Image (cartoon, rainbow, N blue to C red; front, side):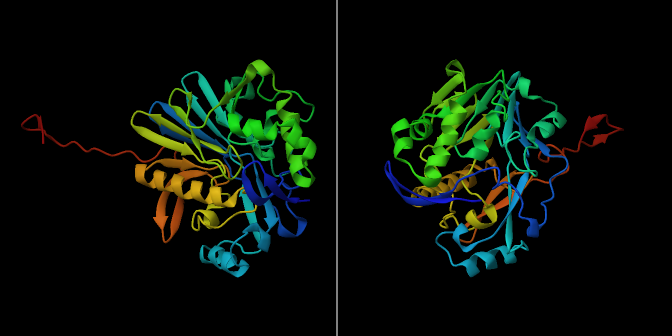
Length: 343
């Protein structure tokens, strides 16, 4: 079941969020089963690099009033209805991103591997369809330590899913979740989430674990961006190459139809709602100003597209499913066949 918890201390405001678990990822029997994308990958060229969205599945859950903490439930349902979306349930996709730069491959977040429900754990087969296998991954870059972003580092038997990869984690995120004294004092859902994080990262060999500071370059062309609030060290990543740019926004917004359109609304997953609100507005403003392509872990597939202003918020405009790259400018050259020159 979904556990709701309250968190105090460590400089965070009182907050409540939901702990991810395999059961959370399962569809309730009376809601039907979400339709998974086919194919479950999407490619985008960013200069000399390639960005690949890899769907790990979709979970469906009943929409309850507590999901949006600071808005009337009827207002939430009205916004969904205005976008021709269901009002009694929500579908939550899980989409890590693979960044390919020559022979270096950076997987951003992991999904569930074989630790989730029946409509999750699809990323490895989608990765294969895109032309890669887990052994090909050189680097795994983690945005934050919620279970749907880290549990896919390990199979159920404890073995490494990506045996050849170094694992990069935000330093402040690691410090919070791996604090043994905090774990001893934690209760309820926080204790479960911290136990899970420590279970995962205690099995990552120390020589493969790399901590990075917010704002630092994780790799050539890939830079971390602080977006604290969702969790203490929640980090996003920009990809820049050949004058083009892309940003992986991780969990900046859980459901863009709600929290991009209304950035001041607080989802139950945000540990510090006010800080998360500020991060949302700051990052969305940056994306719009710089005209960046954006991809989100919980965005509807293909999980990447453009962000444009809409009312008091923003609108996510997904890429079309057909084709792997954004449209290119078409140049038509007409020749004067008699004179033998271009006109």
